[in-house]
Structure formats: structure tokens, C-alpha cells
Image (cartoon, rainbow, N blue to C red; front, side, top):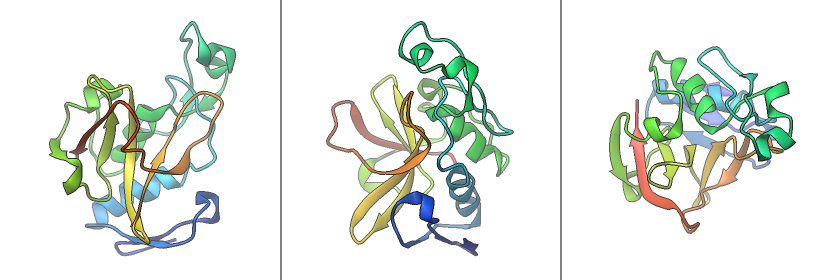
Length: 166
């Protein structure tokens, strides 16, 4: 549920709590991403209008049938969420990493995009903290769904930077 700049996480998030966003634009971005919790991951899926049929990758995504199913991949979820405030992001995470303003992890705010790798191999949307724990919403991988996860800063490839596109 959204009220001004606060978002009460839905049951599908798997955690209870209310998050405060920096402004109403960010509230729209985050609420838009959260509205698709439970939606299938689909390699190459998603655009400004919502989830789409994925594409073939010649490997893992094909084994999960992503090319036959409607859903989001990580960058497609970002394209959709930011389109809801009129921001047109590039389609793939490597290009999204170059969009907006890059900041160190310590300056992350809700609504910032988090990236793993240079060039990026994954992107997620930072939600902020609940009880001192950092959370994000992501479309993680084939065989999974859009979900709220703990931020994985200690995972190899996290480049300790964020991009602010709002």
C-alpha cells in the first residue's frame, strides 16, 4: 500500500514493514517494481509497458523455457519501473550502469539501482533498510521470480556502486 512517500510492503514481499522513499517519484518507481512480485523471471523479458515474452540465450534460460514465457529479467524490470515516471532507461544492465549518476554504496538511497560486475551482469532496485537490514527488489535468474531479497554486497562482483536515475 502506498501513502505519499511511504510504502507498506505487501505479503508477497516475504517481510513486513513500511519503507520511506526520498520523494514521490521514487515511491512510484519502487511501487511499480513491487507490483510485479511473484512474476516469472524471463531472460530478455520486460519493457516500459510491463512483462513480455523472453528470448533465447542458448543455455540456462532456454532450459527454463524463458523464450516461451512472459516475465521480466533484471534490466527489464528496471526499464518498466522507471518508465512509470517518464525515465527511459537503456534495455540491458551494462548500459543502465552508465545511465544517471554513479555513487558509492555508502550513499545509496531507496530507488537507486545496484549493479554487480563491470560491465554489469545484474541490476536490482534498492529498497532501503528495515531494522538495519538492506533490501532490494530484483528479477534474479531463470527459474525464479521477481522478489524482495537481502542486498548482497559481499558477493563477488558487487562493484560497491549505485546509479541514481531519478
